[in-house]
Amino acid sequence: MDPVTQGIVATTSAQVFSKKNHLIIASMIGFLAGLSPDIDIFIRSDTDPLLFLEYHRQFTHSLFFIPIGSLLCAIVFYYVFAKKFNFSFRNTYIFSLIGYATHGVIDSFTTYGTQLLWPFSNERIAWNSISVIDPLFTLPVIILCLITLIKGDKKYSFYSIAWILMYQLAGFIQKDRAENIIHDYAKIKGHDVNEIEAKPSFGNIIVWKVIYTTSEKYYVNAIRLSVDHKIYPGESIEKLDVSKSFPWLDASSQQAKDIEKFRWFSNGYLAVDKNNKDVISDVRFSTLPNQVEGLWGIKLDEKKNDFEHVEYVKKKKRDLDRLNILINMVSGTYEN
Image (cartoon, rainbow, N blue to C red; front, side, top):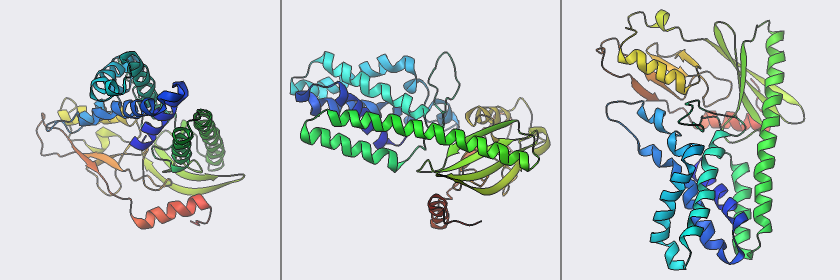
């Protein structure tokens, strides 16, 4: 999730376990520890453009790295500021542990994917119950954290934890509704569904992007879920067939290996971009939830030698018009 949410969820978790007279220092440690796993964003390579996809949300986010990551945080925090507050190293480690532990778990509820069980599994766990940014989830947690600090009353931190859990539960309920409704919708269309997956659209759990697959295609639709539901019909696109789309590609080349790495990252949801036949897109993420055009992809080049990497491309499509469409979808006023 976004850094603010990660930090504030870690803060409220630390407050729950803190003594009243330690609320401020515990909150500081929890907040900073909650941000720390994302230090992996600095793992980059000038020669391998996909290296960051492999390492972001990998070992620093693993459940099994929590004791180590927490210890590193505690050492830094203790000598930089906690010691000055007469806060013991033991307590510094405990609140670092609490804050650090929330990060990978919260990320796993989002749509991006987290290697929560690394090094025993490289599966990117994504429970798809919440968007990577969701103000309705985050703002109440911020408010309750501040009230806890201002009033010195821990009961508000328990309210905050209750909100976090209830919101995730609501997300799972919405996800299940979206998948069931679109599955029935696909049957009406005469499609033989192999797999179906719903993801919340940007910033809310009201409008969902639902992708279902047949033997040859991905079908993408958006659905608004309130008391009733409203489907915004979308697009379809053929699944990636490397031999068909890139007949010139040597299976042992670096570009072919990069495709497989990108396939792992995208959980297999790959297709050739409709606007550029040299680009393979991640179908899971798009600006509008009823579109197939991905936010990012990889660009192949027939002129490259067998040792050169693909190019990673990021598409900037979050324009005002599309944002207004999404807002109208959420409010229920959008008409196809």
